[in-house]
Length: 123
Image (cartoon, rainbow, N blue to C red; front, side, top):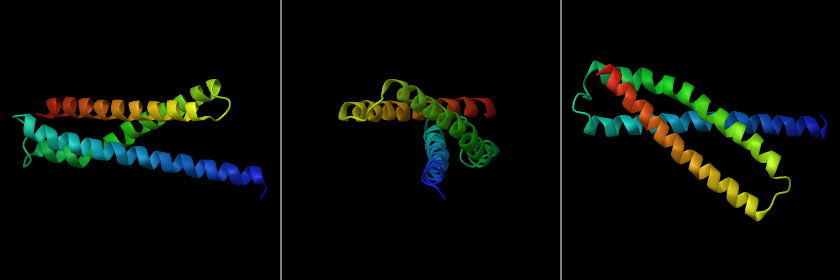
């Protein structure tokens, strides 16, 4: 195997790991949002068919759909950044780290808003 083929395999493994990470992140955000909504929404009860739908089916659907959306956003942002950052530097690393943090906060907010809307629809 040549060096280019090995590096492509490593990159593909990294992309797969990122997909799994986004799916896991959305799962935790969805469950956490559901737990919060159990406390703040008067019509959403733990022992109800709505909670069963939300936690059993909704968690899977959210992980797939929102995980895919967030992964695609991250990959698109990475491609855009490579247009502007040609050489690795401390400043570039700081900008990328800050953008990553902002993206994670936005993804958490989006996951909560989608969860809240879902609870509104099913209750």
